[in-house]
Length: 101
Image 1 (cartoon, rainbow, N blue to C red):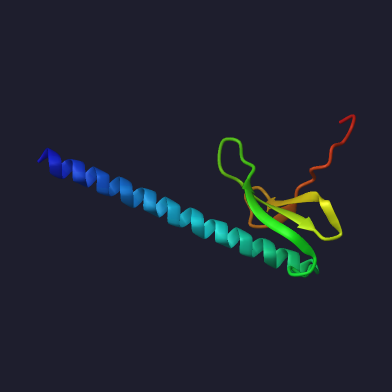
Image 2 (tube, rainbow, N blue to C red):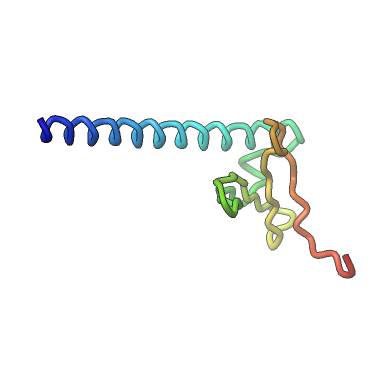
């Protein structure tokens, strides 16, 4: 009896963790695709205008995706794109340092 209960608990945990992983992978793929679509709609050529793009987590307490994009014409600047809070709209984060603020 105890062994069946243990197997049941393990199965539920594995199914839950598997579902979480599949959901995160799907969300990450959608985020990359949405960022690429956004950049193309802004007139960027993904092949010729971008040096590199990669996804990072910028959330402190919970995961929050951001895409770091480096452009050919500004190779030393990292541009961070993320979703506007409670939205599917992509925004460019202002990561410049403002002295005196």
